[in-house]
Image (cartoon, rainbow, N blue to C red; front, side, top):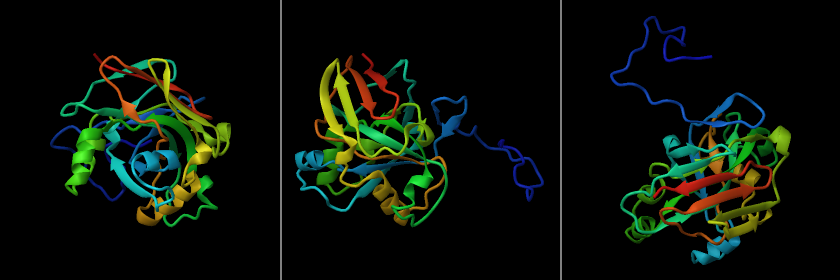
Length: 246
């Protein structure tokens, strides 16, 4: 157990801060009272063929990544409905359901063959996107943060340990809005598999315990408005329900 006090034997004084440090964002773990602390949120862009095509691309282009801040995560329990606010500055808020991978140990240049040993477990999440702001940033050659990395943009459910779920390489992933299915596919249709994603990602960044990876969304992304209720589900994971506040 660590605290914000003397954790390093080289420190001889108690560490103090000019302002209060932010609290650790964490996710529930299925079957445990422990929680999974989040360090970074990595996201994979255009990782299902049909979604790549609906965005104007062909398919198996090399994977690319962007990040969301850890405090953009909204932990969602499987038996609750969590409300998130409709974000500012946008008139086109889109849902994107995704399989989320939680990393249990650090590593760099991890091979796809070894990647599963770095996985703590899986969850289902939503990559909420201010599509109009993202589109404008693309046109101007600017970073995407304003479209992707805003507050409450990453609702994520409880983490199911890989020891319970097994490796997830196939199975249904789905999103409904007000009871109507808008996204439906299979994890087997990932252009880059979970293990390949870890291989590519760890070549660019050294992964650490507490990192999570949002692995991409299938076709069917669409706008949601105030009052809409989304239900996200993915094979091997606890489903989540998220409502856009009035």
